Length: 140
Image 1 (cartoon, rainbow, N blue to C red):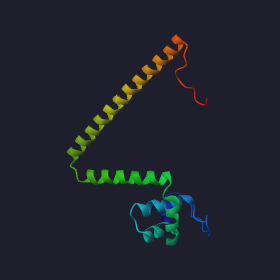
Image 2 (cartoon, helix red, strand yellow):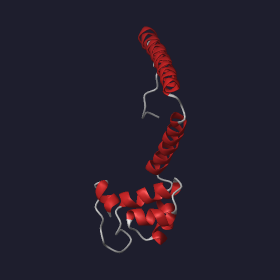
Image 3 (cartoon, rainbow, N blue to C red):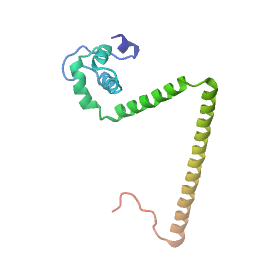
């Protein structure tokens, strides 16, 4: 119950198929899929452990569950690698990541400029030759 209050979630004491709020059901599935035991998750969220297996079937394929699991994997890898590094190495790694990001931004800008040039060439050709080059969406 305390965990729910900390997260600002309300616990409904109703029984039945929709007695537990969906956000809690999804959170239990995420915790179980990320490695926690079913009983620990059940205690954490004050739910019946037998429901968690059913919820896994229902919610495991949802987009938000998959995204959260992916984010947890990424952050756990980063935290493990950054914990073992010296501060100087962390600074160097951060600088290399910033440089990579800057390079990617430059690549994106170049690609966008090429796309703009190609679109302009198509527009000019359509006007000059009175030919429809771009397909209009929705027409068959």
